[in-house]
Length: 345
Image (cartoon, rainbow, N blue to C red; front, top):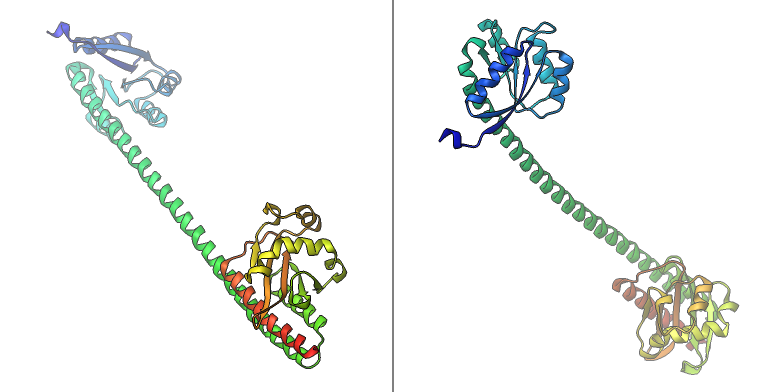
């Protein structure tokens, strides 16, 4: 039965200077089964203030008011961006004015003498408002999904750009490394030719150290030549501060680090000296400001002549290609040193 149906609450803002006319509209809604919560205002200030609360389902407005016109009321409603539909309910409003108001944004016009049309008009506009709300929600949801996809694609693109930049940087580093290798190989060839022309072994060894320091930027190095073909005794040569490199502490440290290079005829690369657990001279290297290490054996014609060692003053990650190129330079340097030793005998 009608009496058993739950009443639907309708929140109505009424712009009307006549309290009796406002109550007539409220009774019409109540007869249709609505529980009406309403507020009547009749000035622009109160009308704007109530619209700002955004709590209304529908706005019913008279077009002729003592303090301002229906057109001004329509402008205030549009300025508020209220989602509640506005319906003009007026006793004196020509069809031309009504059409003009609807063109300007009003949702409908009801004559006060035909309030029986009010409820159908309100329900039609409430249904349309709900459709608009759903459309906005769907659009917002679609927009959020689209934005999420755009953000994801942007992140993926950023990752690809970073990977590409890293690959380009690695490629440039490799090209620079190969250029240094070719330059140093030519320098070693020149050093061997000078040794054949009379350059003595110590000066050749110092030249070799200087060439290797060019091959590995920001590095300092030594060449240690073993005496009598063994690895027990050695003579150190360096491009700078040679007396310091001959200090027994350096020999002890290099024995610990480069034993693999000397004993197994293979290069050794250590990216961080301080991380080496078996390094007894970590404090010594830290005090000297040496961070990374490379060593390669100097072997020629089946004989171990010594080793070349390089230290960097900045952290350096040795790549497989770089280790192979430095080891190839060590093989070329060993041939030049072996030839020099043979000529001096």
